[in-house]
Amino acid sequence: MKENKPKFIDELLKNETLKEPLKEALILLAMKYDASYCFFEKAKEKLDIIDSLKSQILNSNQAFDKIHLKEKEMDSKITDLQKKVQELEQLKSDLANAQNLNSELSEQQKELKQKLKKLEKIQEKLEKKESKPEKLWQDPVTGMEFVYVPGGIFIMGDVFGDGEDREKPVHEVRLSSFYIGKYQVTQGQWQKVMGNNPSNFKKGDNYPVETVSWDDVQEFIKKLSGLNQGKCKFSLPTEAQWEYACRSGGKREKYPGGDNIDDFAWYDSNSGGSTHPVGQKKANGLGIHDMSGNVWEWCQDWYGNYSADAVTDPAGSQQGSNRVIRGGSWSYGAQNCRSAYRVNYSPSSRGSNLGFRLVLSQVSR
Ligand SMILES: [Ca+2]
Image (tube, rainbow, N blue to C red; front, side, top):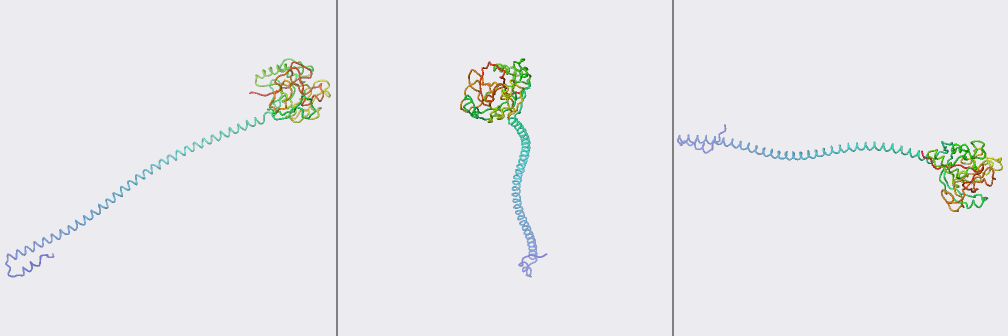
């Protein structure tokens, strides 16, 4: 072991004059000094260790603080992340709801589309029905056939300029669609409804009924409507309806169907002095027979003068004493069988050359 005693003690011990007790005291002192020195050295070492430990502790405290800070940051980041996760969950659930809603909506959309298609089909059918009505309608009671006459505009009256004054002035008429008898009412049909046959020429059921007054016809209409349980609205044609139907829907036709009267009408030159079964002559452009000739036909209107004004669905004079008759007959000449020719008769009058046909304006199902 290294000795650390101070030099001056060695110097003193070299002195031979030094007394023994003093020498011993000096050696003891040197030993004490050495021990103290050793102790001091060790303490110093310990202090160094303590310092180092202190510094380590300080460092680790700082590190701990840093870790704590990081921990806090991490906590805050975790909280943020948790929030984000919650938001994402909410978004996910919103998305799921939206998807459900979307699929519900598309289901509803599908249903709506199907309904729309059905509606369109119904509309199409309705439009077809409206635009293409049945061309023929048959009365279930008498078997009477009616022809559809599509409405339109025509010039009514003496369009050929060879008529009577009472066929003037020509004027514009607008008419709604209607149905009109394909034939004059027959004796068989009259018999079925009225239970009698007032006709002069009783040659068969298919001959036109005649010797019926305008008033008789009103009774016939009332009874026929009753037999149809009020489902059908029958009437005599207005004078405008009659002329429009006669001229194949308002065409410029001198006789119903064309210029050659013999093709279309029984009149004095070809009738042999009698009526003929309905429908034997050619039909006009609408498929209607015997508008001219065979028997005159009652119209609904009071007889009156024409006005030059354009009119819509005219119903004739508002009042009068006679009703209009149209078309000529088996006993009259070609001039009286013209489409525009018009004459009048007392509503109570009857004649073997005077019958009628009906108009159907409405059928309720
Ligand atoms: Ca006729």
